[in-house]
Amino acid sequence: MVLSVPEEEQEEALDTIPAGAPRAHESVIVSPEMTILIGRGPIGEAATPADAFAIAYGMGAINAPATLTLVGRDQVPTLLAEDAGATRVVLLVAPNALNRIGGETRPEAGERRGFHLPTELRGIGLALRDCGLSGEAGDIYRAAKAIELLFETWRLLDAQVLSPVAGESDLSEADSLRLVQARSLIDERWNEKLSLDGIARQCGLNREKLTRGFREMFACSVAEALSERRLVQASRMLLTTNLPVSSIGYENGYMNNASFARAFGRRFGVTPSDFRAQRLAA
Image 1 (cartoon, rainbow, N blue to C red):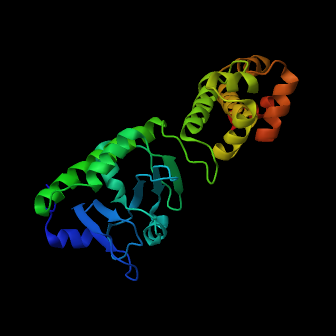
Image 2 (cartoon, rainbow, N blue to C red; image 1 turned 90 degrees about the vertical axis):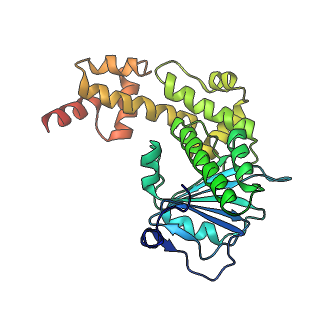
């Protein structure tokens, strides 16, 4: 239950963000592994679980999309020092909490990633933010919603279905989702004869928006993503099968052995035959 952990155990598990900025509008310690902060920021003196990462939920406003921001532990002080411009919900979460919910995605210490906030998560976040209950009843309600929000967020993160926010791009959420679809198409159908026009057509984008948006969102071109997927799979097949090099190249989308050997050499620094021989000899 909320706040049922003895105070001495809470003190052992919690660090404190140094003072110097205004406090959060509201703060609820769910357990030694999670704290809820509700406010615009900057936020100071927040009870923070040891090694905590943070998830910030911006509910959106006029000319501001609803977003989810995931930051690793080294970025938490920066996040809390920001003025978000509107009230948001921030969850400070210890890594061990993910073990309890079976979460697989783990933010790196210096990582910061932004996503469009889907409707189902926004609904939970708004219920948590706008809770009208006070006292212990309000704390219990918000703690329950925070646990639900954490669980549902990680379900979507692990499924890789959240749509990334592409920096300062003017891409809409709908176009961002289409770009995620394009990346999924490459990951799932890499061994087929895929073309830029064909991918754009299947995902409902024009060629220019696919080319520009894909690079903004994934920091590589469509051709580079496709080549990487094919070559990694080819490298695995060289080590785990006895198929001829030419057959492996063909199965991974290369129409002739010369083009496969050139691409493989650029990626791994050796020919496919030498790659196989060196790894097997080792």
